[in-house]
Image (cartoon, rainbow, N blue to C red; front, side, top):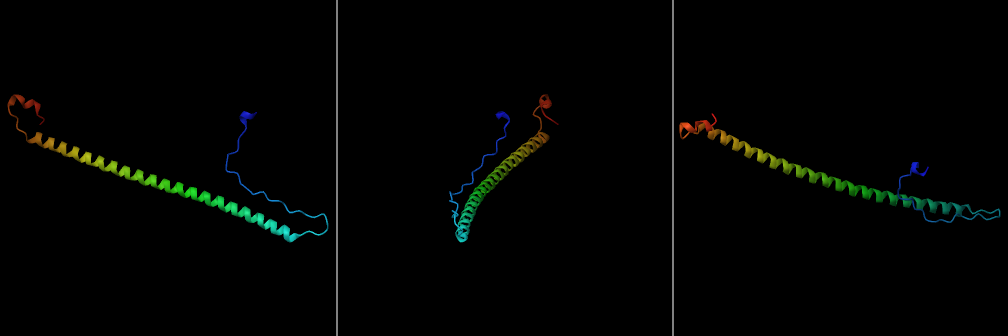
Length: 120
């Protein structure tokens, strides 16, 4: 059933240049040096391709790491600013409450009929 098939994860295909396999003559004489040289060229091209893919991947990972570090630092500074603002507000609120408490404690009522409006 095509609905239940599991698809392989899509990834960048490994690109290999089209190499022509060495031709082995029908006669008794085989040029092993040519076969070895072509095999070495093929291996070298594979290795260069692998190196290129590796360094492209490393470059991408490095860019992602730098981006992540920048986001972390930005978030850290935003949180520090929020904490600073919150602490300033709390200090102001504490000062207001302290002032109100001190004012109410030492305030003398103007007349005895208004005394029930003041907190003792």
